[in-house]
Length: 324
Image 1: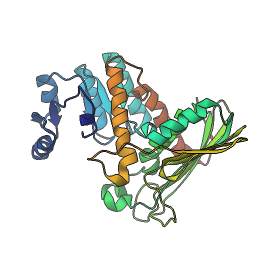
Image 2: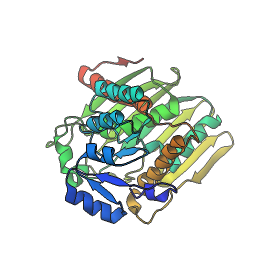
Image 3: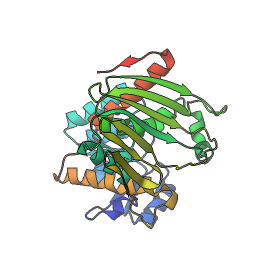
């Protein structure tokens, strides 16, 4: 909500929370005039341009379908659904209703990761043949969010949706993948480590995606930053710690830092992620206003969801999964 307040011409006019008291407390903090504990009533009573759904993937489908039934455009959290089949239902429901359906996939909107796309597109390092995208940390996610312990699927649905979206953003749709998963924490149900190998970019680029929250010890833990290293036919490029991008070619190494915008409401330790919420919101606003095409639509993000569950298929079968 703080992210929306950074943008001109946007005002939250109503809020739904199944616990009215919690909704009213939130509404006071953000000056939201109307609070409901019935989403159907909100959509009947209020004239809204869109809804922004902030809930888990198991409850998202009902809210998306309800919004579609009322003809109200949708912004949804990620992962967009608990399965590919349900994701397909949601994309169809919104298409049949003729409404925009966007997914709040903010990772690609981080300043340094966005700039790195421009580096790759410039051709300075030639054609990428190998890449590594890493999000590995000892951050105690299971202590901070104990409910994660009970999820049957964790790291791939949680971080995989971000990291695999970045892989698609940089290198296009993969042709095949292979995945291995591990459970380091003995008291959780899902996986907390995953390694995914993709063949992408028309078969030209091998992409390895590394994700882990083992609550281990690292000399240089840069959570919540994601790191990237790409080898090309004419050089290499990387997103390093502290938002540095380095490009190395025959002319030497050129380095520049691309820090995120700092907001008063953002946690300084989380600012790369929290600042990207604002730029992600701005992209939706441009699309609603007809000022530019949306990137992270439901139809597009469904492709990421398909990769996530293909990873589980690979990990459980031990096989390479052919895609497309």
